Amino acid sequence: MTTSKEITMLALARGGKRLSITVSVLALLAGCAVTPTPFTKDELAKQAEDDRQALFAHSEPLNHPLSMKEAMERALKYNLDKRAKMMEEALALGQTDLDKFDLLPKVTAQAGYAGRSVPEISRSIDSVTLQPSAANPTISQDRDRLIGNLGMSWNILDFGVSYYTAHQNADRALIANERRRKTVNNLAQEVRYAYWRAASYQILKPAVDEAVADAKQALDTSRTVERENLKAPVEALRYQKALLETLRQLTAIQQDLSSAQFELASLVNLPPGQEIILEVPANLVVPTWTMPLDKMEESAFINNPDLHEQAYLSRIALDDTRKAILRLLPGVNLNVTGQYDSNSYLVDHRWYETGAMLSFNLLNLVSAPAQIDYAETNETVVNSRRLALRMAVLAQVHIAERQFRNAESQFTQADELWLVDQRLSELSSAKTASDAQGTLERVSTRLGAIASQLRRFQNYGLLEQSYAKMQATLGEDPLPDPATAAKAGDLTALVAKRMADSGHTALSEPAPPVPAPAPEEAFPTIQRTVVASSPQGVERR
Image (cartoon, rainbow, N blue to C red; front, side, top):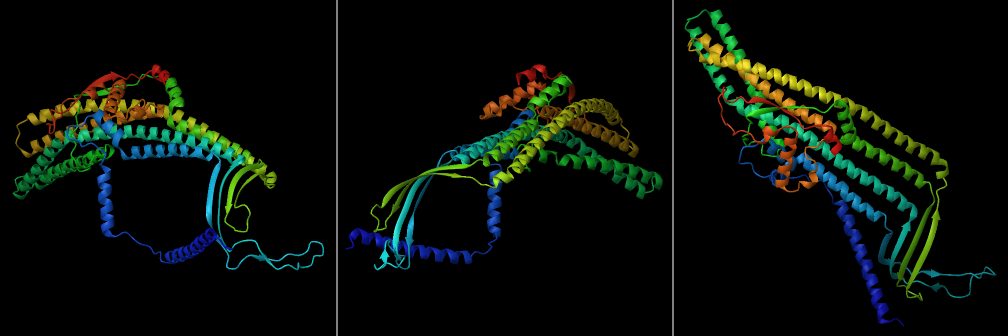
């Protein structure tokens, strides 16, 4: 006689059967109904607006003049490329946390329903006579059943492979950290160069605009003189040609400087349309590098992020070899499972199963030499790349040092040439000649002074950039330990200290900004300072 409990179980089983059929039909219909759905213009506009707000959501607004150390600080805090590298590093570190769970045994739980359209009816034969049994067919299983199990299994071979995989992912997290260091070093180079380009724009723009206006006025006057035949046509045209050439050069300078602030705004994560007023220091500090080349080579070999990355890749290749060897061993699987079956014909509905299984792929005996050779070859290739990279870094050290010396020489020459052009411009401006030729001379000498001042700032920007490149090649980070700079105040202090240690003390205490200086009044002077880069700096690392 069927009990109420069995009736309830049977009703649940049949209800589950109907539910599974309904879900299957709905899933089939939904799969047939999938069609491409492009974004609408309103959705794209909304997404663009949200992204635009997210671009500057975490950046502090700039409502005061920007100094070099603050530009570096903002770049280290808010630059989107650096933030992306930091997120990649955090993602890699998160993977190492997940790898710990792969080392644990696998615990699985299953529960479900099983049903048949007809009862499971079986016949039997006599084991001696091999004739069909005279008994009626028997049923030993319900048509509808509820089944479930909870088990734990542990594969020793998978544990070994997961162990080496966890080590590899930990090395990949360290590689992500080295790539972040490289991004910060490249960012420091770009900020230095962009800052001085923007500084030249701020200082030279008023002078360029004034010179362009004088040139256009002189050109209009010359055309009036030509129309009224006050001078010979050939002389007037030659004069106009000289003015137009001068005007072309001034316009080229305007166009070259027009994008400087946009580049700096992108690096420090400010809206491109925002006007940036810079704190241009009264003295341009010319750093002097004192570390000998042999110490520079030693520092680069120890601290260069590219070499660190390649060393971690070598360790990953070594673990690949160990994994290849480990996969050739037999696999041992241990399991413990608790089972449940609602079949009413069973005496025990709950029971436990244990087992141990040894498995071995016999084809591994054939493929083992090839797999081991491939892993060892990969390891050899990675080691060769590391040696080649060491040679490249060694060359980079000498190239960076030579570029810095060349940039220093070019800046010194540009500064001396600017002093001469400045004096010529002052003497020309002091003349009181009112004829057109006097105007041409004043505009031309002013153009020479502006071009010299532009070259001076450009060469100084290249000097700063080459200095930062030399630091990056040696693996000297803009911040000694970026992980300790979580607070804005700490970051500001670290940037200022780092720049002071690098011989840029004059940049940390700049002169008050001059929004629109006259050409003769906004020319900083040179100050030479010995950079505090010495073999002791290598020993501290």
